[in-house]
Image (cartoon, rainbow, N blue to C red):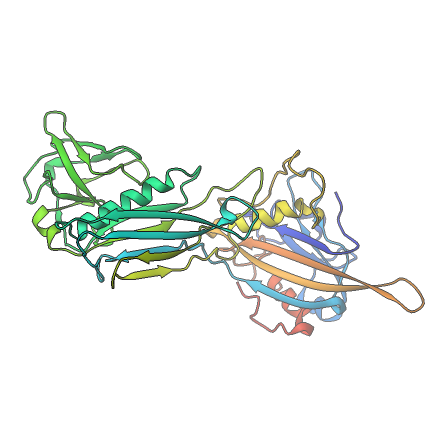
Length: 428
């Protein structure tokens, strides 16, 4: 395994959560697994004092017992062109609301109208193109249709359209702004199965607390007006089951009666309704290790002044998926930035951890331009990037360091002072 590259090098060091011994490593050879360090070329551990006078340094990462540490090539302060710290932020999925979001907004009701929703989904979900995939939902109202009919009908249409996909990347929920009431205490735990319209519970029709579940009424999955609702179309008291108007769209689960609410048919008829579309967490892993989130644009046709609200998705920074993608792209520590041949024949064993402490990584990037004299009058400039990734809950990159001085971030601030880094810029 290469420890340095000549041109266009990009190496990634991914720290872990090593057991602390109370003292830090004094050389690269005694780094414990997951521990990061910065050392001089001669192997001495780098301190802030040394960093002020030394020009050359290396980055090293400890591995499992019996394995040699991973060590970067020799790096020079004089070659540094840029350094920054990317603070971890979690992924945020896109959310689109049509009509009521539970607190504000409504759907314009027009008799004998064709309501048409178009979703222009980024095609990168399934291909390497910049094209779009168009999904849609339709509902034809009648002279007696109200907001709940339109919302429920459109949600069913959109849901069924997305069932054609290999992966559910957008979830569909129906919202109602009517305040619900607690279920009868005898109902107890209600069992929901993803994709099924049947639910079950002890004393499903218990009426100890009104309003209880009733045919024509609604069940809210949660206790907030922003939680989804389903219509009750049948109750079998003998079997202690009820039938919803649509398949349960969330993951299978059992919910206590205190985590659910009932809405009467009368209250629902006078309420405002809406549809909520949320991006789902997409599958990630072999064979592609491509990190992506669902993105789409929404177009409404024949909706009048119906509210449309969209919150953009954000892939976040330092997420496990983004770090694992980069690690895979670089073929582990080898720093390969070109994919040649058939890279998926042998899948790499990644260091990036989906259960990383704090949920993600803080990422320090060092950029260097390394000049190599190739002749009497020419230099070859080799761009080099070093990415140092540490769990976001780490207080020091030298994990075994008991004190707060001379940790890796303090040392880097001194080493990178020539490219605009000042005290506190790498603070974690």
